[in-house]
Image 1 (cartoon, one colour):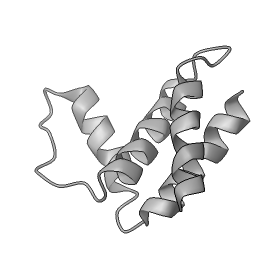
Image 2: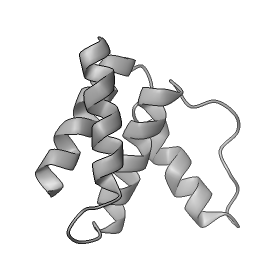
Image 3: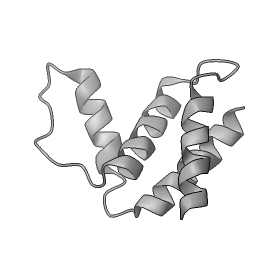
Image 4: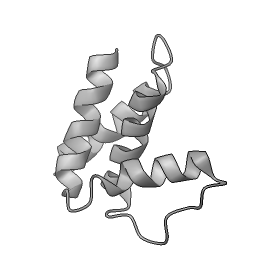
Amino acid sequence: MADLKVRFEQAVAESKQLPEKPDNMTLLKIYALYKQATTGDVDGKRPGFTDLVGRAKWDAWNELKGRSTDDAMQAYIDLIEDLK
């Protein structure tokens, strides 16, 4: 578990230094996996129509509902590795 957390934190640092900026769908996936790994399931109300970015982020995170912290961390690590 400690090893996974260290690798996750390293992947978070590496995500800020990717060779090129990922497309918006990939950025949403990175965001959702990060939030699921660090916070758990999404809570609160879905943002309204006027907050398009917030709504997209909430939807992406909500799709991961029920996924374990460890699973989300590993998926985040794998995604960042694929983008390098």
